[in-house]
Image (cartoon, rainbow, N blue to C red; front, side, top):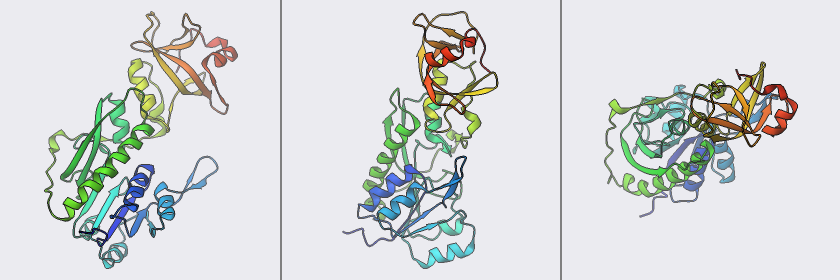
Length: 314
């Protein structure tokens, strides 16, 4: 049986969704339409940033709409007139209202990068790394009007490696989700899978990541700060302040050195490396970047700021 006759609309915006769209475009589940966010100004110069999904849609020659709201009734009518069979959603960024969700015969399937009901919301990958989880995964969910609330169709687990950043894990989970989706879709479209209700009592929610979340609290343990470092790569990164100036941590290591310094105290290790004490163990600053300047090694930074030693970071 060929599944190419089914009319699929794909909703997504960032790189995570782009990987899934690319896999679908090369399969018999190729979407006939893509819905993504608008180009938006980014950075200090306000240059328009193009969504990854838009780039993939153009590359694969799939028509696309760029929408920043789905509440306009005209959009629902236009979508209904296209007679889609299925919606596939991956990190689109907007909630699909009831009148949109009701359009496709086979519903709207969401590819979510966590083992629901754990880590619903905007930042499940970051939350998993921040928590020090050893296992994560992807969930295929039949969407309803609430965020990541609908019944589960399928899940697949994966191990989190020690050094994996948010970027690393996102790439792995997007590929995992794409392959799971392509494996499950034939069964779903033949009505051979029954969605299972989530245990809502076990649900946990994640918040949208903001720039200020990257500020280091040196009263946390070195392990927690290292997890924060990996969770916030590539954005917003992690940073501290010295004499009112922002210092971004580019690379770091955990040191189990025993000292009597208080959290936030800067010191030199026996190997003459720049380190900061935490609640438990220390963080060695391998590479740092002062705001408005180039990244340099911790040792080079110390050479230019010898007054750092035995001071307390903000």
